[in-house]
Length: 114
Length: 113
Image (tube, rainbow over all chains, first blue to last red; front, side, top):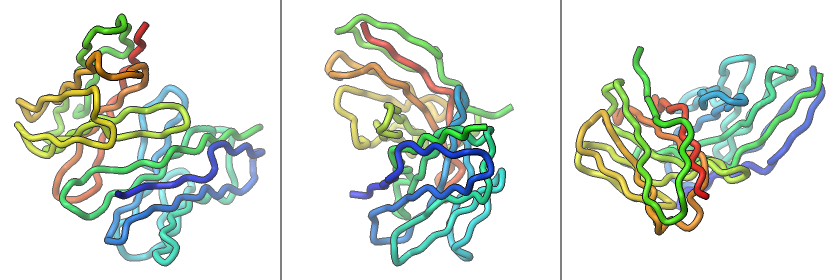
């Protein structure tokens, strides 16, 4: 069965610090990869996605992620976080089978201190 | 505007009662999904449907039931067999031509007392 692991459950940073959130998945075939963000009291929003091509993907709000196929990883990064980045971040994987379902990681709660 | 509507936003039920959560979309998406969100566990897939009159169990389907009689609607029933029904429930929809294009609803918080 497919699974997604997010190793950091809670992260606390000061503003301007760099961020890297880990995401690993288990699936041997072709995958689409996603990072979603959920700000307090808001809907899940798509931050960025990877389907193919350049493994370094840029998303909204200065976020980027790098797909490393050999490591089954899709880590999220931001060079300098802001207080407004305080949210919960979810990595998700869609195996390129016929189901189109997304499998989510357990999430990482990020708190950015001003 | 196109989107997904989940209702109600908050729902309280007594233990032992079945309850149905509504999910309606006007995006013309073929696929619809129900997820359960619990603190520290992320989103877990309950049921999904790729076409009308067809649906599949997700990872935690026990104690839940769904129907897909119309393309726009995918209601979820939380039955009395669900041992821990208090949670936040999210509905989503997507196209079926590829794996992206998920749109999420605003969720329903169910509390069973």
